[in-house]
Length: 522
Ligand code: KIV
Ligand code: ZN
Image 1 (cartoon, rainbow, N blue to C red):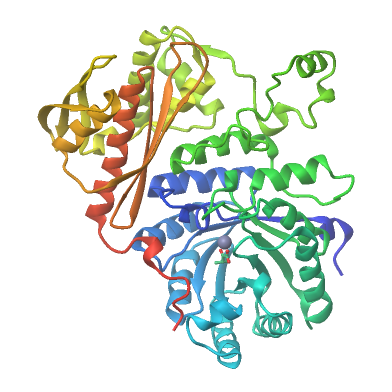
Image 2 (image 1 turned 60 degrees about the vertical axis):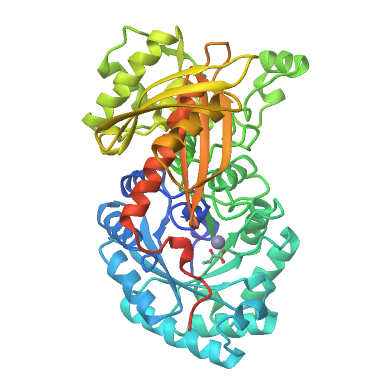
């Protein structure tokens, strides 16, 4: 018999490093994954899904290291319904203080058709693989992928098998973001009522956001009896993403009157981790995103501003500091030293090694020379730029552009390529196009520019521009970011950042994670 506080406790399962990292272009480096795992652990996430160990050597190494380093959270790895996947997953997670194997198979008619298994054959596969996982690890999560489009009777049958074979958590994924809140609740309630043994295990909800209902669906599932929410920071994830961790955590806090459930998350850490995930994944947070968007606590209209000055509660249902947002303040200037910079960056959630700090400090000084006032957002933007220049094969040495009403626009570019200086002059349709043509002339490649985005970090004509680019080559997608008071320089640095990542990916070779088929279970 569980006591009341246990019944009200909702576990937070974060899958930023697995489902989130599957977003095209969101690939993180080994060091970045370790850093994010550390921040997730610090903020009180109960279970970290650290990766998909069979997918690549990189994923295996990251899950292994995260398992070794994490102090509090349970460390989980994903595995298809195959013995080899499960063994590989166990090899990686077994180092954790609290390891978990998460194995899954697509159970809806559409997903059963792909490995060409009939209902009985699939049931047998589930029995074998869950039993195998449970023989290795006493914490096993099983997911019927595309559960929300699986026949109810069959779903009950396979969930019962998984429980009998030892699964301790049953996750019900809305893989394609198809369900709606009432349906999400009814599905969990139906499973709890009908499946023998359902009261012995934890039900989890895993929602995708294709119709913008992921958070509402997750909360509805909790009201119906689910006690684990699967989510990602900033809602990162394939297509429209996943349930956002910050949304469910704050919804449960702010509306505890109607949803009396507790999580173990320290909400004041939300803003820092959100910024860090945006920086390392290359997926900037939309300005009006709930909780973590730049405008989430901004009040523009006169009536709102007036109300806010009289009583903040007139237009705010939570305080910025509840999620760790301190007011954007003037932080530093030209004369600030290295220790002050380190301490300020630590306040913003960035813990840097000495080499990284050295690089950031040089760039901070350059920025301080160009820009009088340096705000928190400027430092965050600075951190988006590559912090590992020593290992970059391509470096910008100098750029001069000719632009204006009389074309053609021209770029004189000098780059260091594998230690050797090379230069070119190219023209284009505008200064950015001319500069990108110049990069392409020095570093020939067939990568296609899929996205080019520019934002101003703060206000004023001396504001820094942050630029994000996304490029694709042979199915591999990489992103690059940079910030500079000169928009063309920021654009060139972002392009070079992406190219450096592409070169690294080419060197590593092997399969891209997304080339591993989830459906291939035969
Ligand atoms: O969305 C999904 O179904 C998944 C599974 C692998 C759990 O991510
Ligand atoms: Zn998913």
